[in-house]
Every structure is written in structure tokens, then in C-alpha cells.
Length: 117
Image (cartoon, rainbow, N blue to C red; front, side, top):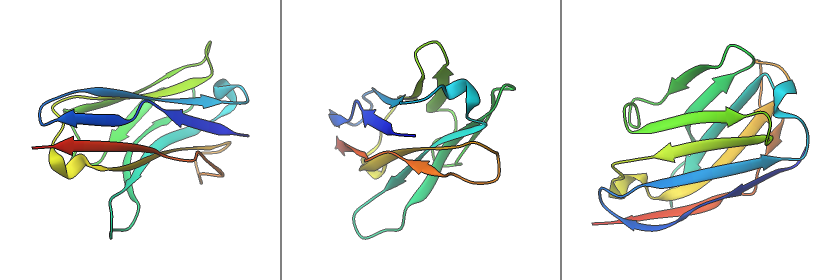
């Protein structure tokens, strides 16, 4: 499975971006899809995930209420709508997917998000 992340860019504090992650296979078959990010000098951290057919979502506390993860199975694409962006959201964002809910087996290449104050 190949994942292609896009949609990153540079915005000012309070701005919005929508990240997309196009999958080479049916996202309907992915029981776990998520977004992670890695800021310079820091470890990769969990941002949000969406599980299988239930569509259950989970978010890191730092983005809860500002970010929304969604999935369009018709387009085989995962999204991350990011609102009220803050400078601390600056990072490379990665999408990931897994056939089961136990692990992420596939990773995209990352897309840079830069938020300036």
C-alpha cells in the first residue's frame, strides 16, 4: 500500500489547512488510519486516528477541538482538517494505515506544515 500525503504549507497563527492522504488501495479495507507529526528535534507523535467501518476517531489532547480527521472511501483518501493553527503545530505531518487496529503497517512520505506567529 502506498500513501501520498499532500496539502501542507505555510500559514499564520489562526489559519487553516486541510491535509490529504491518497491511498493506492481501498481505504475501506484499512481498519486503522491516522496522522502523526514530527517537529524539528522532537520524536514523532500521534495526532489523530480513525478506525474501520465504525469511523471512531481519537485525537491528541493538543489538537482536540481544532483538528478533524475523516476518510472518503469513494476517493480512497484520508483527510485532516486543521483549524486555529498555532506555531506549535509546525511539523512534518505523516499519514499512516494498517489493515488491523493493532498497528500501522504503511506510512506516507510526509508533508510540511509551518505556522508563523
